[in-house]
Image (tube, rainbow, N blue to C red; front, side, top):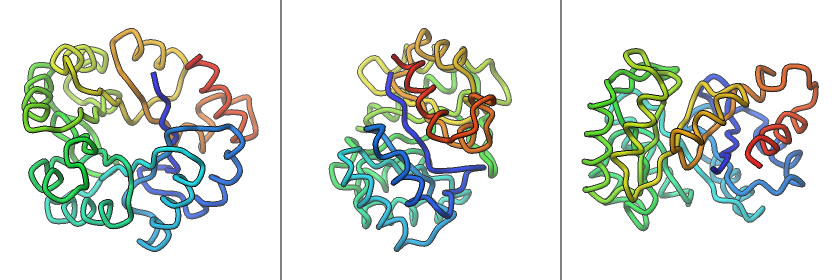
Length: 222
């Protein structure tokens, strides 16, 4: 299961993202992402260049709360050259405007609401979204399982896994413990994101250094 390190806190990209990226560069992370808000477009572009310069895949997660803003964010992702776009539900727009289309897009399954984003929807509804999005050509989905408001998080993961027989399941948001990571692996997730829990110290609370917390997550993955 892949760990996607998000340079974000409270659903916003941190202002010193490039400095933090330089700090963790020796760890050799291969999946690094950020949100579409928190810094300006020129910094997003420079950050994407930095991530790809490390040999990692660059992810951008769309957390815009309107359809128009989400489309604008996807257009920005195409412009700055990220490798994978997570979130939003603008499937037709993304498949048309992203280079490689569905190979890059992982929309939200379920019913995302507000900012920071919460997730409404039952396991059956999430499964239906997964099948529909995969049929349209998306590479998989982005599932906010641990931000669910109507269902058990792992029930959502299992439902999504069963529906995505040949697609990639990324679980994002609210992950802050080794137990959750192990549970996600057992339930069938292909990848997960962590951002806030690293920066606020809720993952590895007895460690003082950010790089130590990231190392702990890598150890759990191993």
